[in-house]
Length: 172
Image 1: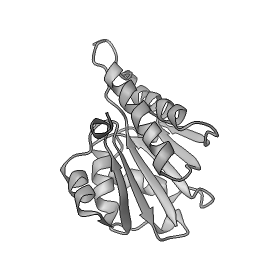
Image 2: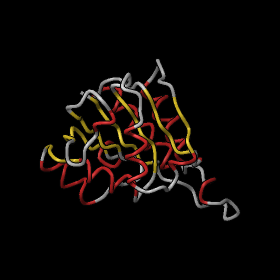
Image 3: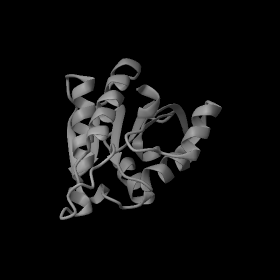
Image 4: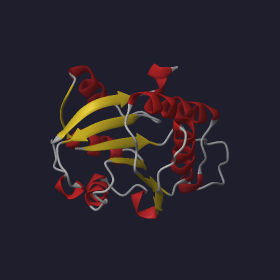
């Protein structure tokens, strides 16, 4: 079995108009949300063995806050520019290339890519969770999907069971 954590970056700041989209940091609300989500994941879910993270500043800061709240030991992290606003298909291809030694894999990226990917991978799970996921993938949210496959290369559309959909506003 493989567990996939699809984490959308938390709320970012628009305070500095000179910054490009890739360079926007988290705002105070985003910092709090990432910490809440990390604390929740630490209490309710299995280990994460590898993190794939967009290089956008808001994604990196979200990952750092989530990992800090989860506590040590920290998994290896691969920061990849190619995960920045690349499309759901590219994200899926990258996940399929992940090493099978990682049982728990976290992907930190952006909408609309994550929302599209999460919906495409989800084939089962509690009705309420699926409804929430279909409706919206808010900033800072994390979809937890479980797959009955020993290989990431075997990730198929509709094969995931949505085990949880963590939304910051429901944690505070």
